[in-house]
Length: 362
Image 1 (cartoon, one colour):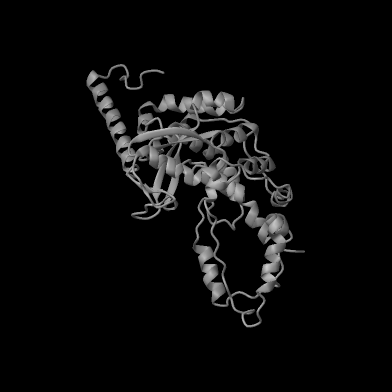
Image 2 (cartoon, helix red, strand yellow):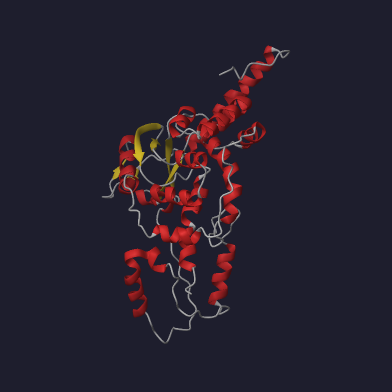
């Protein structure tokens, strides 16, 4: 690679010194953010005993997620029926081949900053000193997607995320009080942003509006509807389930129906109610096989499918505890919450579910 710190012809060595000083400042900024994210000094294990060594903390936290991260969920055949109904009237108008523009890639690079670096300890700000070279590198990565992930990895390097454990609240001292944040390298994050700048505008407007997590979405309308329902502003429905209800719930459909039947009580039949449900570790549990099936249903071009899957498939994570780096461990499912494409991929994979549940019965 050319020396991106060298001054152009006609500039003095003093300019070079200034650029190098800025480069050192970029590394200092990255390291300071990095250190702020690694204050975890001890954790309680499943028996309530304190674990204080970095290696022990790493092993204890990994054990708390091991069964999820090292497993692959079963892919049900009914998913095809759900996707077939969901894709009616939807089409991904994505270019058949990537056509990256250097100006757009440069904009992606210069907008990024102020985040912790990945395992390579290289923050976004370093790439600001070689925008032209980095833009060409990202363009090369996009073109590599046409040949396959094997070519792409030669540009982006190994898919290993930095694993940071963030307390859900102050003084959380148990494993269930920690939220795992998986940060790809900043180069991979820039690549993810470049990919999303092409794919996002073509697909995001077509995602079901029932998802508040879509780009530009808000929980406000759903909250407003819930309060309006409790105030009696909505009429009672016929009590029919959607035509794809059984396909979504699978083997649990009959048990859910039987449970609902036992709750019939004439005293509360006309009382408005709201059901609050939460998906436990939603990003972490997403199956890659289901994501592949959704991408196929959208008929994404080969390069786009390769680009998106290269960000989530074959991943490894490496934890940093008390300043020490742990071993690399393989991840077989889920989306890392630190990647710029992760929210989109989650919405893309989950959108058929609320759509199917709400589909009316003819």
